[in-house]
Image 1 (cartoon, rainbow, N blue to C red):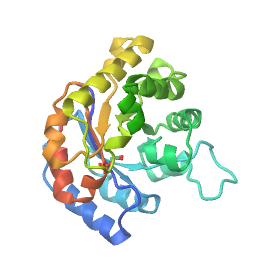
Image 2: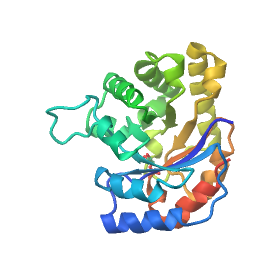
Image 3: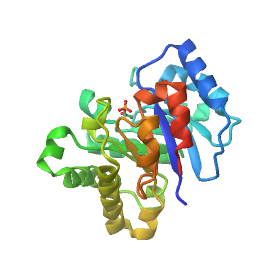
Image 4: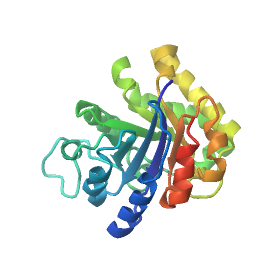
Length: 253
Ligand code: 13P
């Protein structure tokens, strides 16, 4: 079975003390995680070392950065390289979150470069895609999201593609309390898998985890994750509440 992943995206929230407390609370609980299940905490840059120290001996729990730069090193004040992340033992990085695309004008091409450097340093990118409300209302979400995949992923070969995790996050469902229904999530995620299959073959497409993000909570996680093409979630607001995120972890299939 392909990997099922509960990923917390803390975004720009929590002080160091609050972050430590939340992480301790969530990771100290007993979970029955099996080999195909993973938990990932995407934490702000200043907390990466702290979080990595706490999870490094835990088998199924990992830390992610929320972003990285596309260059190896050099005069890029304020940016963080994948080599730095690798040197901390970080194994995942979120790439192309809609907030980065929107507020920092990150293009599909720029994200393609970030994916390449992540893969070069053996860091798993969690590649985000998803349509804004006007596209959903026009009914052209499939074409919109397929183009995001084509522009950022389709230069990769089969082997490289299979090292990526995809997170489908409809922008109209992020932080709005408006979750896509499980049927909507399943429909578009099955479509995205078919887009991957048309380029790379169905065997490759079947290996790729596609997470759903957008107002995932303890109360809807089980239903969303039970869909055949929903391989877990990328969770914002609810990941800041220990009981909520613990229940989301327990909802993984
Ligand atoms: P919310 O879960 O707060 O809607 O955020 C989703 C998200 O953007 C995760 O990356």
